[in-house]
Image 1 (cartoon, rainbow, N blue to C red):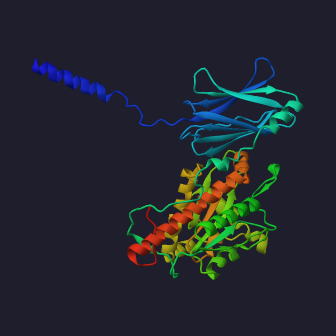
Image 2: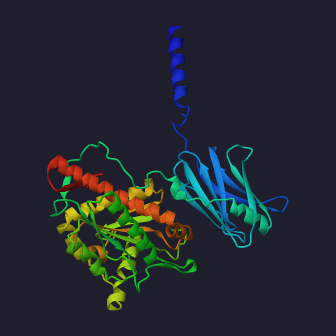
Image 3: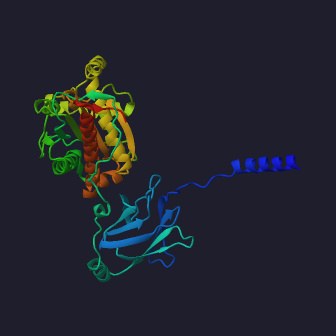
Length: 422
């Protein structure tokens, strides 16, 4: 009898091993949005394909050609989201991550007038947006009773922070000759007769967006880290040669040089995401393409023939600037972490390339690609005040966190050092 009991217990234990455990926390996902014509021919039904229920939905129609929504659900994930294709009625759907949910903006073609109502599907998970065609006069009344949603208002603590008691890593590298980490050079890419990459169909230029984001980063630093001096390579639509950008950091005894740009892949309109570079050998095809494009600005300065830093020059630089490169890589990683975890953007990672804008800066230096202007959805995001606020905040927070790490290292070690350990 005793052996039978033991055998039974072993059998039960074996069965339990094969019972899949319930996940401790299941994220709600928005996988896609689909569009269907109403059966009565009077409009459309928009279906939000969700893996679980949302807490609530808010809808506003601030103009005839825009419908704004917020789907409230904690940790709502849009990583695998697929946006609907453009139609004669629907121009585009844009997603805006906010705290405890996501914002959605639907852009309609002109002279389309619809009133809306929302309700859950029978399965209780999907959300349906019913759109019924109406007369222009009724649309005017709806607009008069609507308010525009500012998605930034639904993001708590965009750039504030509190110090936390964290352990200090004792593997440090010297940062430079200054007593403090107190001078940051902010470089808005391109400018003047050099527009940078362009999205002609949307009328967007890299030089305009990079300047707007750069100025926001500077404003955040001045407001929240007032002991840090901000030096700009340009504050208006001025052309600055590549060599002058890095030399600005050297002349002003900068502790960090940050160059802000926007990527492009004309042959791949679906390409999207952020990248942050530090100086070195280009170790991937995509890094090489960015290097060629950014260095081609030399053509506008001295005629054809962009800068071509040799492999030997870059190897010598890596050997003689080990400290700067390690710190640059650390800051680049912090920037990408902020883009991925705070701004909820796709991160394409930290990369090295022989970029002339960084070559002339005798200080830790990074070049940031905010996204792809060739991707319509990403271009709209980067051209919006919301998108620029989110991206500038992410860059600021990375700089702030690095300074906090640096200041703690001084207190812990009594030396001017900073960690390059994650």
